[in-house]
Length: 283
Length: 57
Ligand SMILES: Nc1ncnc2c1ncn2[C@@H]1O[C@H](COP(=O)(O)OP(=O)(O)OP(=O)(O)O)[C@@H](O)[C@H]1O
Ligand SMILES: [Zn+2]
Image 1 (cartoon, rainbow over the protein chains, first blue to last red):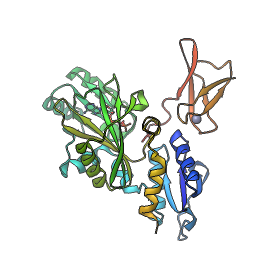
Image 2: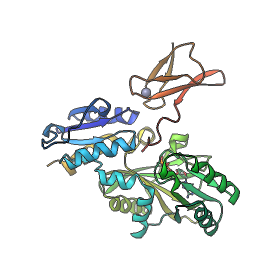
Image 3: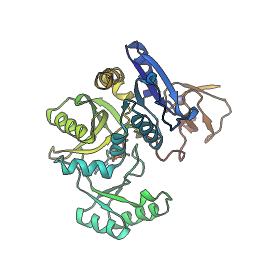
Image 4: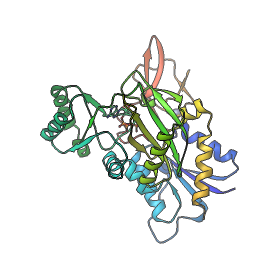
């Protein structure tokens, strides 16, 4: 038995599954709603009683804040803030992975409209344009020609958030109607799903269907490396296959959603997540 | 009251019978802002848009 804490804001099905698993495993559990608590920055330790802490805020900014507070106060945190920071930023993720030899979709970072259009010309249409932050496929768009790219850039100029004016322009990968979500737990990839969709965006949050995926050697190897390079912990690695069967890492998720995976694979991901994290982090 | 499934936490939410298309509710169990919409004459729920640019995985 161990002490664990789960930090939440709103609670998805994942948080309930995680809390249920902790109880089932007999751990001493505390659930902390960060919306109704204050973290004091002072010399007192935040308390031995927290044990291994799982940061599960749905807001990525809050998750990073909570993880930073905990980690830099000496609390073992899943995931640690550096991992959340790297995974939460596609520019960092893609750069880190590509420099270390992992295949990622060819991507340019453009800071102006003109350069975004130039980069697209070099890649060839269609191109995918996405912000450096974001999830569930929001603001991920596909432009088939310079006109539609121009319209998209127009729209982005009207968004107040300045990070939306940093454009990732990416080669469009012809996927076989699905992508792969591999779950990385502390150096291993025990389970993966295909996300099958009619739409070119295969986010389950947008209605893609989850199907158990076979753990292909190449996929596992690439996903394990990607997870290690981001800094380990508990991660969701998104991979795409192209027509030739080449595998690309598209992004890494730092606070995984897994309800559909649990449902279709029966793999007890929340329990594994807890047990493996305790094994790694308990001092 | 109509019982619907919360799109965020998948547990039940009770929505008044006279809830309007587009009406917003807060689901007490999980804190989600949900929006009622009507499809093929049936009330359904989705996450309210625009409140959460940084939500997700
Ligand atoms: N270069 C690409 N070529 C083809 N499809 C792509 C490309 N980039 C993204 N997609 C599709 O769009 C979807 C959303 O893109 P991406 O994963 O980058 O965004 P996201 O908002 O971080 O999504 P999430 O974190 O929920 O997986 C992906 O699941 C994938 O199906
Ligand atoms: Zn709910």
